[in-house]
Figure 1 (cartoon, rainbow, N blue to C red):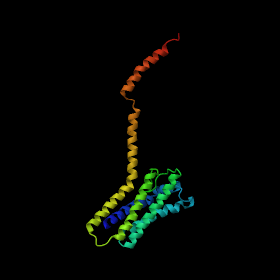
Figure 2: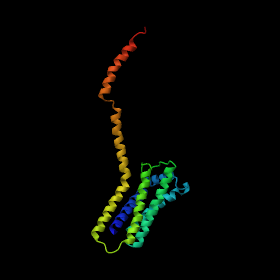
Figure 3: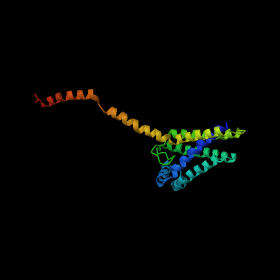
Figure 4: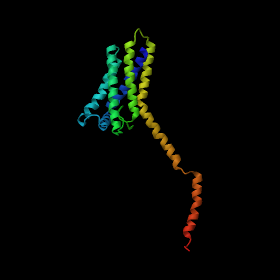
Length: 211
């Protein structure tokens, strides 16, 4: 069970790495995150900028804790991860209840509006962090290097998938509706032939003099 805990830590670490870098990299990305915090309405307007800076810094700090080998640091990192994720869940849930559909700033700039899947994602990640706390508490004995590395790689890849899933969903949403629209707006040959036949008759009626 120790390897599962390692995988969860790698998953959370990668998620927080992508999240923090996306919020801090470049002025445009950070400005977009500030705007998303403002539209979320979770904090007073005067605290929007401090919170928008504190969140990615806390994510980076959590990443460092999760990477440290000491069990105390690992425990602190997992608990901090669970706390951050539950705080995000609460803020998003309250915003959705008020009808706010602001873009998700979870990983920096994004056009994907907030929705129930963001609440579900954060709850699952928080539950994983708490499960890893339990697993670490019961883990005992030595560990092999190869399975540990495999758990790290698997967890990191899953973390990347979690980070880009919104972009993938948005990509498919922008591709498929256009294809469906093109098919529906094209009346088809049969309809066009019927229209062509009907037009001469209407012209002849308009050309007749009234009785």
